[in-house]
Image (cartoon, rainbow, N blue to C red; front, side, top):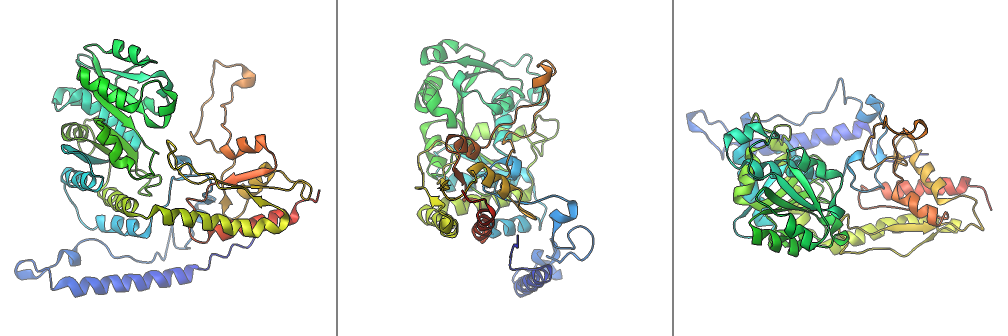
Length: 468
């Protein structure tokens, strides 16, 4: 397969050198504008580091993945963490670079970033934001903050919550999921309920909060607004995990407006911020307590949930771009990418199926594209097509067999023949099982030109496929 990326190491370094030159020129031009005392030094001149080409060691070839012997992927799966989530836009990368230019008090930067988030996301009065090391980290520091408040002995003791007055978190049984581990790791105890009546009956003096898993809203018997109503009546907190649940962008302000005390969104999914970033929006006091439980503070449960100044700036820019985007134009871009593929495979009798799109889906909202193989013309299944896409060299297209949950350990108590960890099938494999002649994938995380690469590879696959 001939992947025509349209650039080489030499052209890349030349472009980088030109960009660096213009950057330095900009700095020199602005130097006279920022004079500091009699030394006439500018912060822009003396701080930070220039962008430079790498001429030796790691990165000097222009292909860091090949240098490490790791195969990169074209993302046709979606914004899943196991393959890197999403790719940041150039403006985001630039603010990450600028964030590296100076030292700053991280707590001060976090407070300022929180105000920026609250304004951008139209948060209710009395709410602010916090940049966290992912949505899972937001849950850790959020729940820890609820339990510790600003009491130093509790801050140091967590997750040993012995003697803490309130440590129980109510959760609907249907809302249990892999990430309630982050609640449990704070020392909080989960109390399962199923109905509204059970939820109310479970509230007692040790109850801290009610957890709401937004993507499982349709599985539970108690809605978000009902959850908030019950919690308010009984003087306990509410937390809504809406990690993968934007777009639509309006959810950034709709969920806090419902009255949830804390709401978290992932920064590294469709918002396309740094992969290890998250957004926690909540009442100012709770956000303050959450910050007290995380880095840069020491001797805290969230010290490992470190967020760098570069990540904070990158997340803010990504969020700004996301909020201000024309989503209709974004959808047209997705359609255009899919059309490139459809046009390429049509000559083989491979037909594009109607686009599936539910803009009000609870999570991972994006169009779904799929194609049907004419079994009277080609003797190849959709599953086989996906396998061959994944086997593409030097850049794989998709990741067949990659469990979105990551590695799984063995179960020593299981039967020897079943002790191996279960690997979940990708969604496209499930659809292929229903109709073996179809295949499909996501296009929302493709970079410019990757639709053509996929189209060319499919042409190769179908050209070599046996005739029916």
